[in-house]
Length: 214
Image 1: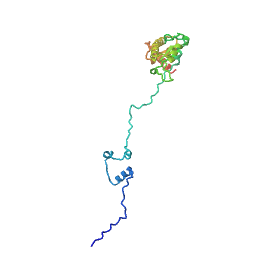
Image 2 (image 1 turned 90 degrees about the vertical axis):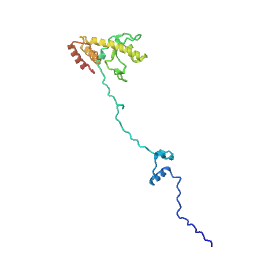
Image 3 (image 1 turned 45 degrees about the horizontal axis):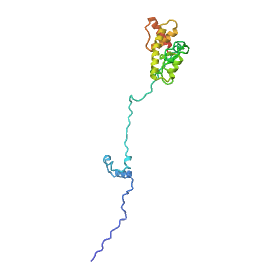
Image 4 (image 1 turned 180 degrees about the horizontal axis):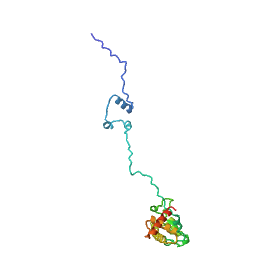
């Protein structure tokens, strides 16, 4: 007698197939919920390329007060003396640029240095103690001429040495108190005051204080 095979009961609940189209991010979140633990270092090479960029690393930036940071520098006070500048009128030219100088004392003015170490900066002129007497031709050559910078610097420094000697002569002169005070003011800033009797030294200090920023 043949037995009839039992019919298999068909499950009413269909087995859920894994969704292979599931995004790697959702798959990772699902694995974390199920308690799966993975080493990001070991598995970084096995992950989907779409998942790797999503790994973020927190970087902490610490502000350090160093000395290399650029800080605004306070501008120095310009040394001005109007009488010292006016003293150039009618004086001989001290620049004496060969082939340029006219030695026309009627055109002599106060010519300032063009060097930054003397206070020159952009439109700002150098300090008045770094000036020389120069005729119009030499002044134009110094400021606008095509000569090399080194030659201009050499010509000015030589003229400035002659200017210091001229100011020293004026500082020892007893004719004009204003001229003497202005010359002593410039020489004091240059640390080039001549040796004077004590009474003249005291007057010189007073002249320096009164002539500053005049």
